Image (cartoon, rainbow, N blue to C red; front, side):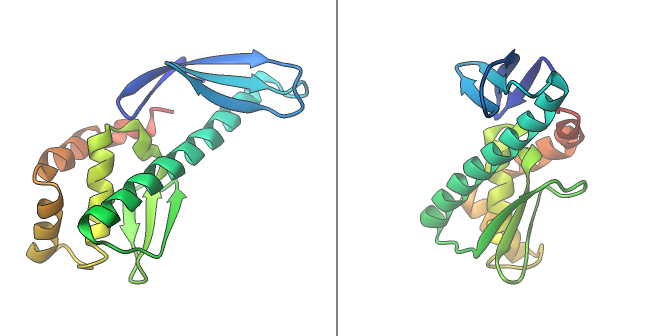
Length: 161
C-alpha cells in the first residue's frame, strides 16, 4: 500500500484506521485518504477498498467533466464505462459509448480533460483525420502539450497505485 497518492495534481496521504464499524469505507478529508476498516477486516483488504473507491471517484469525476464538455461544445454520447485498460486511456465506439481508464485520475486535470475531449471528438469523427484533430484543437488549443505529457508520463500512471 503506498503512503501517498497523487490524484488530479494533488497529493493525498493514506491513513488506515481499524474501527468498530459494520461496513468499511474510504473518505477524503483535506489532504488525506482515510480508510476505515470494519471490525472483521484486516489491513491487507485496505488495498481493495481503496482501489474500489478510486474507481468510483474516477467515474464521478470523468462523468461530470464529460457532461460539462458536452454542454460546452455540443457533443453527445450514449454511456460511459470506467475500466482498467492496459494500453488505452480511452475509447469511443460507433454507438458513442465512451470508455475511460480509471487510472487517468493520477494524471493532471488538464490531461484528463484532453483524453475526454479526444474521445468526445470521436463521436463526430471516428478516425484520426485532420478533421478529427481540428475538432480537438477547437475545444482545446493546447492539446499537444497534454498529448505529449501523456506520452512521456503515461506509463508511470500504472505504477502510481
